[in-house]
Image (cartoon, rainbow, N blue to C red):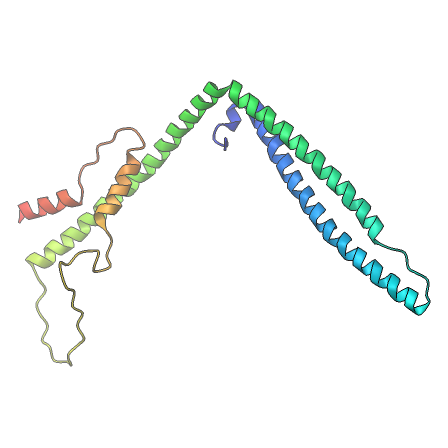
Length: 213
């Protein structure tokens, strides 16, 4: 929860580490209790079956294994209960610290939020510039095909199958990328950092291409 600021607050780091360590130990203790409970129940069944078989055959009743396992189970249950109480105390201490240093923690989190936003924005800006260059290359290729179409080849082969698209031809119905959505997401990420004016865009490139025509 506080990974981004934990190094700046040593006391909180210690409390967080203590809570995490006790959570892991408590989970292990509960798992041990559950495992011993299953073993103890099974041992009781086995002991009763062995005792019944021994009495029916006139043999000496073998030593029971269930009492020893039950003793281990009781010990494990006590250990798990102690760990639960230690965990509750540590969590309470952490909660009191956070309540006392509320403003300081919020300030550090705000700094981390701004810093991470700057990193996201920088990466998004680089990606956006690359995306706009990619769009420009697509538009240039489309404009070239429109102005200077390749000569039609003489059709000397068999007819080929055709696909018909009803309605307007868009990136949605042709399986292509949604340029506006891609650009919009990146611009939102760029906005997480300092105000940056990014020139160009799919619509502007299309308009400039039409004006040039």
